[in-house]
Length: 270
Image (cartoon, rainbow, N blue to C red):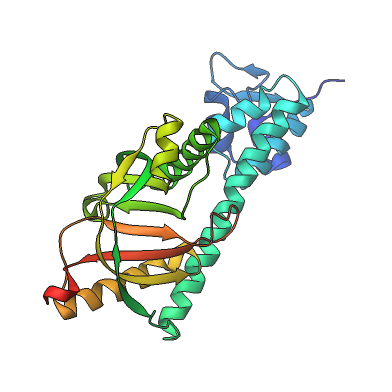
């Protein structure tokens, strides 16, 4: 038998505030069974408690309202599982970032960060298959993943393999102004690429001060800082993008080992 209750009673039963219930009503998530036209009072049915509990659990996990709406309105369990899985994956990613940030802060506060070894290296011009574009700092991770997938597809379609580790060039404006040019590339054999009609570019050679970052991305700024400080103190910096290489391959769901190259002047001319 249906049992109608006031919004106050329903709020007490579900531990959802009046404000939240009004919000969910306006959003089309949980509509009352009746609204008094003269007073505007909302009334709910006890059969709606189960839906309210699900919505509360999802909101407790910070699921955005549009995603909650998609979950509630899903046609079947498969769609609901997909919405929930995507959100849980985002939460786990946020937890990893939070953990890395906490570890990084503790290391700085406890002065346990160690300075990386820095060496000078000269890169010759590199024939490569590349994906380039203008990116934003907030979107660089998504761009990186998409560009890498594109590179793998191009190499696979051409039937050739890279002849060196994955590399990337990032204009310094990307870090300073939050928007800048970026290029992700794999070195390839020029002759074989020509035979396969694979579009290639020539990545500029140059001199670099190089340091290896082996750890979470949340602490990569420490390696960048040590490298930039070394270059500035020795007065050897030059214009040009920062170069990253990934010498141990790409590790998904884990940490990247990143070799960072800061552009410097010709050491023999110093």
